[in-house]
Image (tube, rainbow, N blue to C red):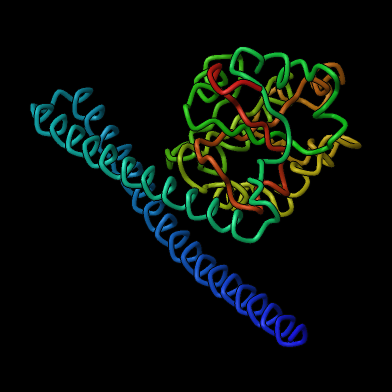
Length: 290
């Protein structure tokens, strides 16, 4: 009788394990499908941003020329803004759905259902200056990676945009032109200020890497690894047309030490590649606590 009871216990345990594995497989497939849907939403949103920037440029050109079509171009801008707002909402919903599915998968596969936390540092908006600009405690320097500031509220992006930084809006095609990126990087090095890539609500980190490579082969990795700052490697970015203010002797060690590279995103859980290549800094609102 005891033998039969033990066999029944083992059979039930095996069934429970098989059910758990099947459920984890189902949830993993669901996460993969939702991730593809999120990527689709991000792609459409990026295209809408590009269209909005194109319409704004057309409207500004029309106003300068006083061609008498300003009302038409203004309406086109408004229509493009409406499209961006709609797709931004869709992208946010897709991200939330994906985040819930990932949480469900983690609870299914982790012992005790413990929720996985975003790795890296945590701070509040009011602490961004100390954490990013001053690097109090040398946490960023010790890690060796440049920060990826994670802030769904968008307050961190606003904070960085209106500081003395060279700001690159990655949804604006003009900002991602190789020459503009080169000058933004060169200026940040020359004057000792942060270079900020605002990724908005999308996975545009690969696009930034591609454009850095378009500036100079190998630049993306040299910049991310900080090797660009070693042995005057940054001087390879200079061009004869840059002017005397960018002469080799104008780059001072004290200012180079003040150079910072920041990526900021509104995506709550960025792709694993970003979390590995950069140091996550999760911005928490006061109500969330630390």
